[in-house]
Each structure stands twice: as C-alpha cells, then as structure tokens.
Image (cartoon, rainbow, N blue to C red; front, side):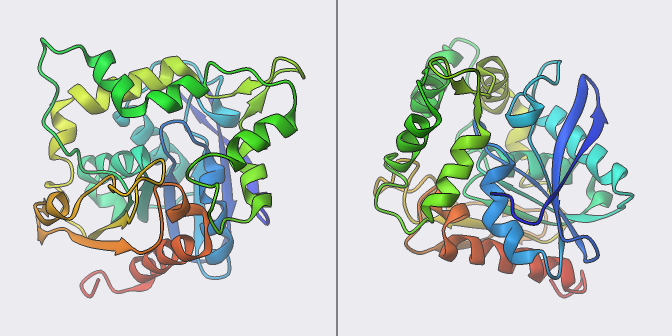
Length: 302
C-alpha cells in the first residue's frame, strides 16, 4: 500500500537501506518496525500524519527491501542506521518512535544520542520486562519461546501470493479485526520473495536471531528507558501478539517503568492487539496523535 510515500535508499555499513517517507515539509519523526516486520507496519500511521509531519521509516537491515544489507544486526546497529537516515534527510532532531522491537531501537537511539531525539514514542514494546538472560541459560530456547511462531513463519514456503495473503488474513491477530484487508495484503506482499511454488518471507532468520539474542543478553539495553532524559510515552495494546487476553506489557509491569524524568507515561489503547495497534484505525490514530503531540509542542511543555 504505502500510499503517498517516497522511497529512497540511504548508504549504511553493508549496503543501501530502503526508506519510505510520508509528508515532507513538517516536523520530522523517524520510526522503526518490529523484529520480523517491515516499514509497511507504519503505513496507516504514515497516511494519517502526512499532511502535517514528515515520517521516515526504513526497512531495517535483514528485512523487506533491506534484506540484503550485509553485516551483523543489533539494537545499536539499527539505531545507527536510523541516525544515518536522519543525516541523509539533514535533520538534527526528530521524534523517535518504534513498534515492538523497534521501540527498543528507538529508546536505544535516544539514550545514546539524546541530542538527536526530541521525544520517544514507544508502541507495545521498548522496555525489557526481565533482566538479562544469565550466561548459563539457553538463549535460543528463550528466544524460541518468545517469538517461536514468527521464526517458524520464516521457514515456510508458499505456492502463490494469494496463499500468503490468506495466511496473514487468517492470522489470529487479524482474523476478526477491523483492519482493512487491502492493508493486510500489502503487508504480506511486501514481505515476499522468490518464485511461485517457492515464495518465502524476505526476513533473514539469522538477523532475527541476532537481534533477539541482543535484546535478551545486552545489559545496556535493560537501562535505556530509565536513562531517557527527553519526554517519552509508551502506548500499550490491550491484547497480546496472537490476540490473547494477556497483553505484552501488563499494568503491573507498566506501573514500574521509569525514565530519568520520573515515571514513564503509559497509555493503554483499548480494543487493540500487538498488530492492530499499528494497522487498524483506532490504533493508528492513537499513535499518530502522540507523534503530533511531541513533534509540534514546545519541548518544555511536552
């Protein structure tokens, strides 16, 4: 779908990062998507803010049209890539935002380069909810429990584009949702590579595992939210990744989150799950509202 967005590439270590930009003249926000997703997760938000903001969203290395960018992957590497996008756009400061793993990337960027982040908007992700995995624990086993279904999808092969579209339309997160089927199809279409009979996801399982291990073992990442010195907000979906009743971030976990400015502002978005908080109208409007709030406010008032 990606209606009205301009596609361009930004040189980064390992190749050219594919980036989409909505708008062009307004205050800037830079966004990161989830661990097995692509820029298309931001389509609905991009369309909503294009009239008054500039939103830049890359396919992160190892995903989408950036699948062939070489080199290892980590939260720090993704944050560096986002900074390269800001430099390419000649932007000194932006609202930094992300969904799921991308929210951790956003927080990592803002904590490491506070002069580049006007504010941080995290969407159903960002704060690690447990301490770093101890050295004697099987990290791959923990990762498999956390994102097993997503990793399994990367090994699947599909006979046709329509088959992959049906896979996503029937996904528990989307099956009974209000998300426009055309948006689901666009999300699926961008993720496909290969030939009929051997179509598969563009997402690199190796990059996903690297990012997953980094998020589970890197002690620095467990302090990035508490280190944030700029305004920050966390939007939380009411339901979980597979539309289960338990959200990714519980009220009890949210109540304990702190930044350098004090308690982290947490807003729960009703009637959304981990996917629809980005792609249905209710969720996308909630995210767009926060981007406008921080992009247009005086920093002292945010």
